[in-house]
Image (cartoon, helix red, strand yellow):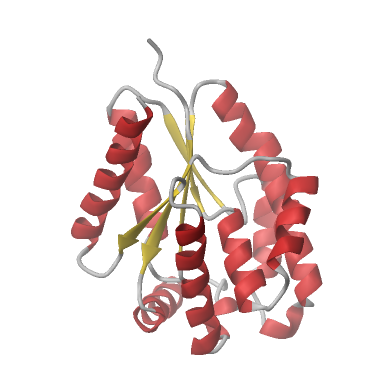
Length: 216
């Protein structure tokens, strides 16, 4: 019997270690009976990467919050249409570094835009495409911001627009993720992202495998 394909999203505050966990989860799935690809938002497609370069760089006043939301959604439309749905249709699981949960957290709780409008826009523009499982890497934003700013500076990457925002903004984001998980526990699992990279990796893989067993 073929292993079913699932859509996984990894969410969390900046600097929580999402990118590394996405890589580990995709590798773990590919070492077993599943096939999996890794991707990211904003990004995942040529169009999405262009939007990523626009929206994550520069000063925070580069975009109005409505423009920011629409750009994020436009990138997601292309991502779902060109990457996520074709992979799932071919029997390949998808592990994404961020998805709509980030929009609910950043543009919703962070910027103060209505969550019901964000969900409506997602439903109309993207369709009823939600992850089967969301792994929320929970970390104190103080720790995460220090990590993220250090990584960006070391690699000379101009993607630190959100890192320039105050700590209160990032605390609202963290709380939004926890609220999303509490509101939909069947689809979310919260993972303690404080600790060594290997410890967090083991927690994430264990959570993934526990969920996969529940689906069989």
